[in-house]
Length: 307
Image 1 (cartoon, rainbow, N blue to C red):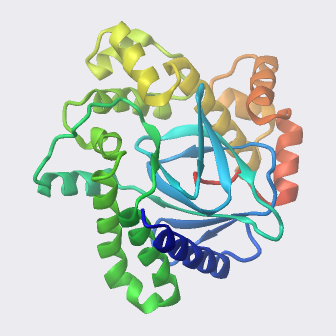
Image 2 (image 1 turned 180 degrees about the vertical axis):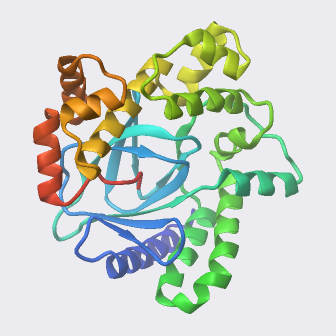
């Protein structure tokens, strides 16, 4: 990528995000699904459940943990998640004078499937099972993301131009280094689609005990194949994946719906309050009561996204 052009586009992105994300850690925008992020300090990790999304950094750097996998990325890289994943993230480079700045936009699998159907080469060059990846930034992806951000200064153009630019961005992602990762869940009969069926059952049945035989039947796989491909896609076993979803949902119930810890634990399938408290503290860094009180006092709930 041409250095001068890369630096100029990045500087313009910094100015746009600073202008449209003021006095907050996260800002929704007039463009559907587009979020902006700001962080002034390299702080402790925050946890969130990330849906299928693209994210990039305009200034600073970040470390993301997905299961037992660790990812570092900065302004020369971008991130793609193709499935819903619980993640822990921490800004690693930021300061009050030069805050961390990023953007993220959700990815609709139906739009990916539509694009793939119209591409000359409909099959990924490389078969992958990963549901999360970091790719090296290129001028096409950076340019499309910048054009999307520019629309924030001309809101009347958003209804017509945002869908066009978003489609270009998705196409650039599909033809980039993480294209196979993004395409896999839109490919009928792929291992990823089979695993997503098991993931959906876990998400919709949080209070139910994990039955590997049942998940294998849902995915139409053997138990050993299910375990292998589930771990490859999510960096977690089915039990670990469900546990993290349970804890995130319990946190939401306590913060948003004002459940107490015992009620929230029971709602998501925990029979032992002490086990719930122990696993909650291990994931979020504080016991349930203290964690929720801190979040409520700060008016924030994690970083809310992957950027």
